[in-house]
Amino acid sequence: MDILIENASQIVTCRTRGRKFKAGKHQSEIGLLKDASVYIESGRIKWLGKKLPSSLKKKNVKKIDVTGKTVLPGLIDSHTHLVFAGSRADEYSMRINGSTYEEIAKAGGGIISTVKAVRKASKEELKNLAKKRIQSSIGFGVTTIEAKSGYGLNTVSEIKMLEVINELNREMPIDVYSTFLGAHAFPKDKTHDEYIDELLFEMIPLIAQKELAVFIDAFCEKNYFSVSDTKKIFEQGIRFGLVPKLHTNQFYSIGGIQAAISCGAVSVDHLEVMKPSDIKALENSGTIANVLPTVSYFLDIPYAPARKMIEKNIPVGLATDFNPGSAMSENIQLVMSMAVQMLKMNIEETINAVTINAAAALGVSHNIGSIETGKQGDLAIFDTPNYKDILYHFGINQLFCTVKKGKVIHKA
Image 1 (cartoon, rainbow, N blue to C red):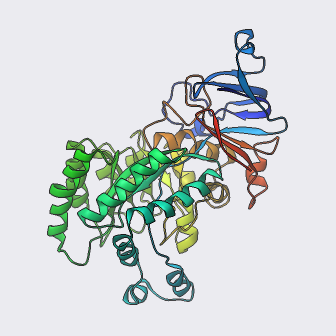
Image 2 (cartoon, rainbow, N blue to C red):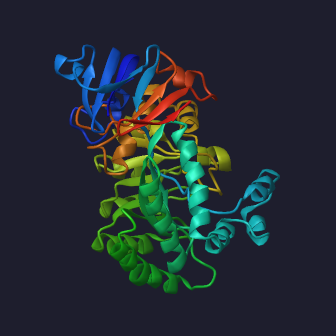
Image 3 (cartoon, rainbow, N blue to C red):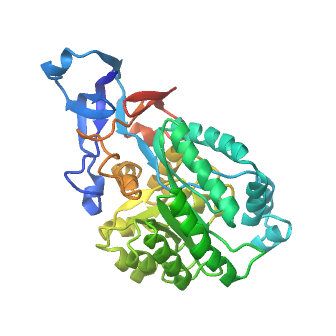
């Protein structure tokens, strides 16, 4: 059935005017409509405005009165690690009590503890855990999410994670985009060269054959994957039809951004440590700078220089980086609040960062990320007449309902 969202106090359209993303001064443009309605037909936006055309009045339509409420495009979480097993709460407690990473690793913590838990867990266990996390995300207004592998670190377990992500995409009411992140860390049972060969010649061809991933990612950092490693992995991924995204510049600037751009990466993510040359490289590249403030908060490390990047006309996106080691939260609204307070982004830039620019970080801004005719009917509706209240009244969830392809999938 078609749906009419009517009498909204405000509709934040984030309209694009033909752009794939918003950068610089355009990142502050939200295309605000007042006292307006949205008509969704067969899952797509058919019309929006103040006065419903007579041709649509005659149709059999479900009406939702949103008087006194604000409508945003469905929020998009473009960087998560939501498929995992186990808990690292004890490790978190050790860290806030002063333990170093080396001490935590010696005690059995760190990424390897999650790898052990994932290898041990069944597909069904992983999927059931992930479903609860996705449902939580939907409750904050998320209608599209990205999920990475990377806690398997061998062919069998990486495939298992990707199969879970693909099943979640089929079974959950939102779109779940799959990213292969086998190059997340090096396993303890293989040499550097052995694991690189497994990634290049075993995992990537098999993942492509099974059509299990859209994107390929790597952790390009000192003591992890070098620029040379990253380029090899990306070039092989591209040969097999995968689109690069990159974790980089979280702790060091080692050339990851330049490598990602040279390989046509759709986004570079983290960016807490940025040299002037890194910012220069991103200018006019068309690559989304995807920043993750919850990681800086959780680990007590510097925040990405989002303000500088926006001033240099670089499109900035935001995501949760939901994961068990450095950002244990599905709350995209919390990310938005941190962006305003800690990254010095304004409210309008922040909204565009979790809608149209987040869509661009997944290469799908032609289909989602803004409220425009022809696009998918994905909406997040908030119980306030003013979009600024969403971040002004922080720490609470003002979501009224989440709409995906014209269907209400969550109601507060």
